[in-house]
Length: 312
Image (cartoon, rainbow, N blue to C red; front, side, top):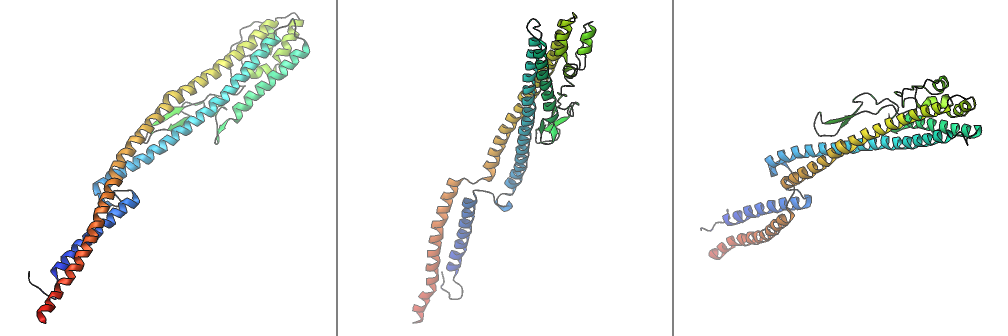
């Protein structure tokens, strides 16, 4: 190797390798500080494209999970209110049966029972009118049409669950009940209009009066029980329907989405995340190489000084 003053090739070579080592060390520090193997497209173009698609799917699945959870909350809200309606209906049935004990019941007792019955019916109507989830009224019949509730529970178009909730107010319950008794008084007290007729027609008070008049009080009690029983069946059926949607549809979808999210997140992590133990080993290697390269550059810069000895 010839010795020159104007161009120190050895020093240039050491400088080039030192710059490469410094760039690799900086890249390693970037990965360690961010925790990401891919921080920009240049790090892995193909990996970036694939992982960005996965990220798009992940945020969509996450949104679908939240949608399904909100749908479950809505169904649970409606079902909890209907549970209270069932309690009120059972209380009403108890009052009707209690009033039917004509050998003990007097007018004041029948009137008290009627008042309590009226309050229960009012409570059912109030629950039906006021049960809300956000701004949606759940039990007032506004969601009774087929497909009135559409829950987006998947990351793609058309991945929906449809539901509807019938009118659960007192004047709508047991509307299909048919009173077949031939008693004129019974027909006057209870008709096919449902629970509300039990209040507006004062059925329990009339039961006692009909007993005193020698007409068939038993028919009135039987008719009242048939209306209440039909309402109990209707509410229970609606609760069963909502429960089936929640347990066999929404909850199954939730479990599936959570598994899909977990697996997709693992796949995206494999592509995008840095292996911290491997990267730390690389960082240590480049630190040592940087120190060695700096030392060798200093040595290379000393070589031209040997020419001074020839000039002396």
